[in-house]
Length: 297
Image 1: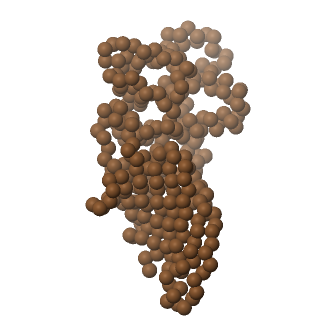
Image 2 (image 1 turned 135 degrees about the horizontal axis):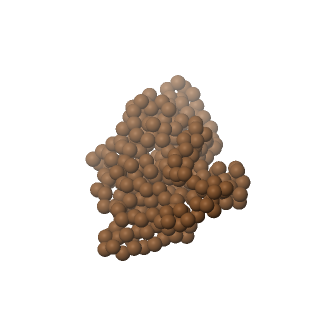
Image 3 (image 1 turned 90 degrees about the vertical axis):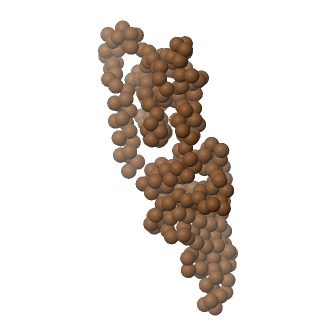
């Protein structure tokens, strides 16, 4: 599936870059490139910076096929995630592989930037503020929305969007802080309670396998009923994959109860027994995700 996803993104990448000179006609098109080497921006927007064809060729020579493809795939992946959010916020998106970028503010002052010297692959521009330069991997939807004067998004709305992404199997890293904690808890009538925690996770790890050390107490309540002794506690490593943990969920509902702290949201899944508890920071990014599954019996 990932293979086809990257193929689609690669096509988008090629379209965004437009028609490029080949090695054979680079010289004859040099004059044309000189007159079209600048992008002038005077409206609020987000600019995605792309390598031109010559830079791509140099990257390919320098890194070789496999590494080059990996670099491009990573760039496209994080750009795509950011673009999805920007479209939802109705923020103008511009793609640029020009040599220079001219940012024109509301007073008519011009800031000229050389694309290859910019320390990032995104520029967030507001004509009444200093531009923000960042990499797509560090994209923060709330920071960008606030900078561009978009209405602040209520936390429950962000959680609703998270639940939608979760249900549809979309990447979730855009919702997470760059350092977050996974808390795991299950309670089974026979097996007892199983708990674990892993800290300092990167935001991208939510979309991959997370190795977490778990401890099971072996003290299921049903053991007393059926006359069995408590089982020996055990510790083991578990491969946590969120998309697999929620395969049996019959709903994806974001809720906040009146007695909950303002920075917490529940995502309810299978009945009332399976849920995610999300802890948000002041930037409305998830810093703690608690996975909880209680045996309703």
